[in-house]
Amino acid sequence: MLIEKTRVSVGELAESKNFPFAPLEGVGPNLWGWGVVETCLLLPGSVCLMAGPLACLRHSAFMAQARGFYKRFYMLPIEEVELVMGTQVGKVKKAIEYIISKEMPEIFLLAGTCCEYVLGTEYKELIREIKEKYEIEVIYLIMAPLNLPNRPSPFDIAYTALYEILKNAKNTRNKKAINILGTYLPLSEDSELYNVLKPAGFEKIYQIQSCRGLEELKNMANSSLNLVIHFRANLLAKKLEKIGIPYIFCPICYDLEEIIKQYQKLEEVLGKKLNYKEFQENPSFESLKLIKGKKVAVGCSVVGSPYELAKALTKFGAKVIAIFDRHPPKPFEKDYINWLSENSPETFVYNVSHPYLNECIEAFDEIEITFGVDAGVYCRRAINIPLHSYQAQPFGFSATKWLFEEIEKNLSNPISNYDWIYKYNLLI
Image 1 (cartoon, rainbow, N blue to C red):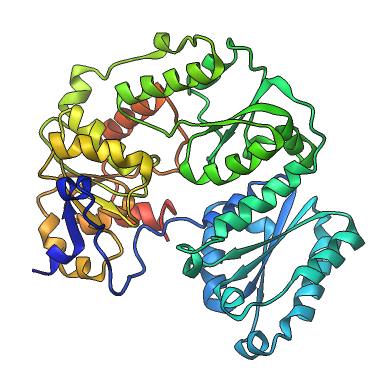
Image 2: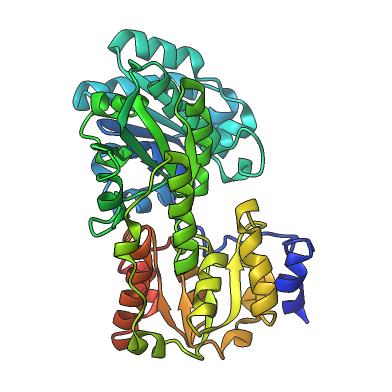
């Protein structure tokens, strides 16, 4: 059967069997983000020019509109012959100077595509010239999914650029300041983390997207700790260790026991007790009834780890039939997989980008609830609960609270997966 090529049981994955290989990777429905460009556009006072073929620009145009960045995002179409001959550099320079004269940004982002990666286009001299002439920060980044498995990856390049800004900032250590790294949205206002950190002595809690200007962003270089809540931001946190800022990785969790473990890790690093227990709130009996015994699937477009969410849902009484992922599990997900192999051995893990899945969607017709829009693409009869990073950014016990709020809201008033994608812009 074709479907056997797309999956592996969670037990086999726990025993280190390889993640399902896709001989021809489809444009997976999990490609919900615009990560590299979006990460840099979070910088205050930034403007971006993307230069490349129309097909690449079209995708980015949709994402700029969906994320509200369209007023700070410019596109310059480059013809194939210009790319091959290398004559586009002059064209790019004129576009940059026009945009700077119009916008007067503090940070200018020049975004390339896979074409620059393949052809080895060189912009170093142009970037140096623009920096000297206009006395602004210039960051070159590359939106090249083609290069994701390699090093340096597009995210390596983006985070290195952010590090260069902070590295050169005035460095006066502030023991009352902490950075939260790894979010596209600021941490949800109802997150108890604010009320946990402030009594612990942190008067300043910095998040990139909350900074009001470049100078405030540079204050992050003075913080005493980086709290990383998404694994990709570990790249930046490791670089910031070089300027004396330690970090702790506490990924978003939904399972109450896992949340307590995260706070205990934070206590250990800080060397002090935190008042997190007063915010713990167990789901009500009525809330648990909504998913008890339900057959569910979890996608990798959810906030947090799909494996940790699957563990939490299993403990809350749901029956996790499928987990959709794009890449092999991360090292920190190993414990979740081991737990699932013992407590939910009937769960299968699917490569969401495998082209065979499109021929096998009837296999998922038994699933009643999906978490993640990518899972909803294949589970056509299920009610979808996106738990998307563009909806909210929870942490701690507020994440569990948000989970059940979304379950109750979407089960009582379902929204089609089509509308989640095209009306609410949760997936491109």
